[in-house]
Image (tube, rainbow, N blue to C red; front, side, top):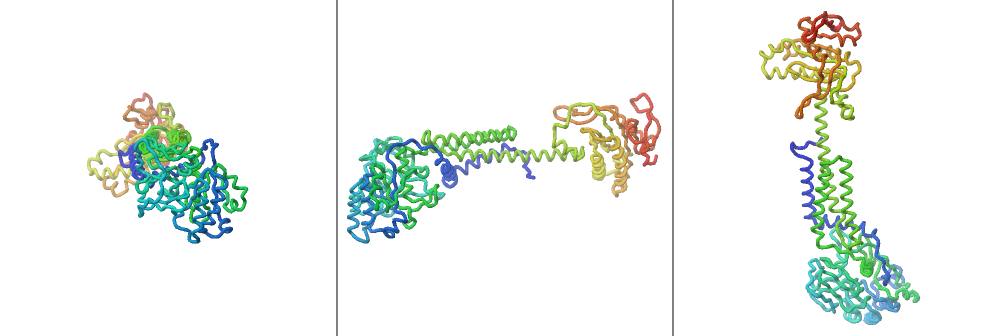
Length: 619
């Protein structure tokens, strides 16, 4: 059992957990928060509907393993690559992009570079470059990028310089784009750059440059507010000028060997955007993406081009970094209030509903508004807060219930307590008339004993006495109504029906005498000269229920049986007996188990009554 420090409430613990989660979530933006958000999008984005599209398609010309087996291992002579590019150019594509860096001269033959340059000049072609941190050289023409006002891109990918294609090849190409595709902190590649900053010059990514050429645009235009115009296509730049990939693109792939050997297949490229790359592991172009741990880099670029052409480009808004923590706080507080105010089942249902509403709105914002807002982080913070609060509430309630059970077990038999705990509705605490058997005890000469006993000794002796006597009462199905000084007031047949309650009360009385004699014979009992226990028992109707005000309630019984039991207990002194049984109880016992002690008139009653004692006791 977990113990809560006194005064600590579930609401306090839940609020502390919420603030701790928000703090940790805010401090770990990339490690936890960003990774959680991106993994949620990895699952959701591929399932969303793609916008209708009727423009040019994206086609991959794949230098696959069959091509390597057909034309030789990589790297190929540039003349062989020129054959592939020439075959693609013969198909009249809208633009050709090479997903490879052609930086140095052909190591096989200088004629190969010339042949490749000639093939590149036959169609709008884009070559790739890579960012270089050590080299500040800019020996490469840049695409004109126009802007009507200063544009802030604080997160744009940047470097000191670039590694450019071979000049003879660069002269034949009509555009140049960055090949870089950096992985997120948790491993996969999810973005490609729309723009990069190299040595102070803004340059396009490979996919953007391919789209520009396919659109026939002479330059790129950046509008105030971070909107990039690529011909007729508009792209939101966001803060880092990257494009978030959605999933595997719906693009066609044609083996390079097929295109070279079968000229009829080249017509399939007419008017489309073509990317030349490789899916073969030998070329080292496989990358980890959410879709696959071995995605060819050419597929990544093809996905980016396809998304731009379709207008399927969602951006993470700048205000998301403020709205998401605020949403987590509001959701967390709502779930916290639900956890401490409502019943568990209803609280769980409403908490889940609130979190689903946020997640649904965030997911719907992608196709509807092209916005990327975290669908998982705020609900996770809120649900964790809710779970922590509910756990503390459960522990608190269980602890209170345990204390309550322990308290009740001092008055009732354990099986009765378990019955109440299992079905609280079965316990009727409002006043009701029922037949009970009352049992009252007293210790002979207790007052004189208290005058000669040390307080600590007296308390220790009473503890030992009540430990055994109260257990006897509850073990026989009775309820301890009160302990008054040295006296026990017990009720049988309440709060639940108890079969043969009169016989159980008499059996309790016999056991009480035996147990009290054992306490009397103990060293402490002999030293303090503990007196005999006297018992009075009577059966009859009584009103039972909770009695008291708003601050104190007492489940007890009121009626003649209670008064008579008290008088019968006192009559033992006059009669010289230990157990005095009234006529109400005697009428419910086997006559052979009792004998008459005599007759007497109880205070408050007008007539004489016969009183009895168990035959197993001496008179």
